[in-house]
Image 1 (spheres, rainbow, N blue to C red):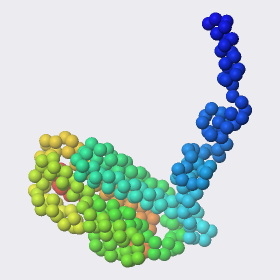
Image 2 (cartoon, helix red, strand yellow):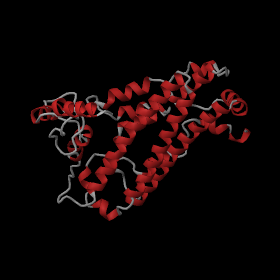
Image 3 (tube, rainbow, N blue to C red):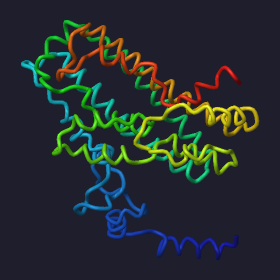
Image 4 (spheres, rainbow, N blue to C red):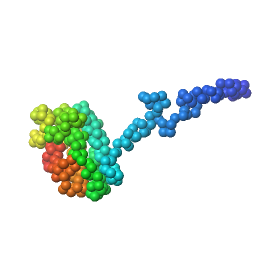
Length: 314
């Protein structure tokens, strides 16, 4: 570089390369990165799409942390120490039930679109959540029977038996029951959701139609079955499933994920029964239910009996 060029560059930097304090301040207010950072609250993220000027999307506002942490409202006097654990565990269960329903509905859509790879991936997510549901019982079992009794009588008619989301999950997996619906009063908002689930095809129905589109001769009466009825074993379908296992690795892998789902739900039921027995023994459950006696009746009833029925023939 010549001496004249160096002089010219130096002159340019002096006249146009530097920015005045007024320009820097203006740039900072615009937040264009050329000046100093705008004055945002600690932890502020991107500008909120909605809301008053100057409001920013944060971790707390996105997840509604303040509202979430205000939802634990013990009813016992004091309140009793262990009631907080009881409330949080069951609220978390309901959140996971919501997510499992969200994912099962997605699997149904994927099967109807014959996207088997994505359906299997989503099934693995559901199975992982089921393991978390079972593990949470370990936490609940740290509460002794005496500790539970300190607030149990204040629960009045409230009972996990009233969880409409778990009923929805039973319905979408084929365990339909008019009796279960009849226990909800007409003014209950959940009743509409339960009736809709009751009348909709199940995950199993979506799987059977997927098998048909893959070229397997699923009996017509199963494809046109009354979807409000529980799934019953079919010797004819079992013949088809044996062929799937022997000839079609991709579809047989999907069958195994359905078995995993069935087994995972049965495991959760078993652990739930043992937790109830451990906590209240043979006493009636909250809300007047039969407690552990009723829960034992739900054990070892597979959602997809045909997939279990072929085990000895593979």
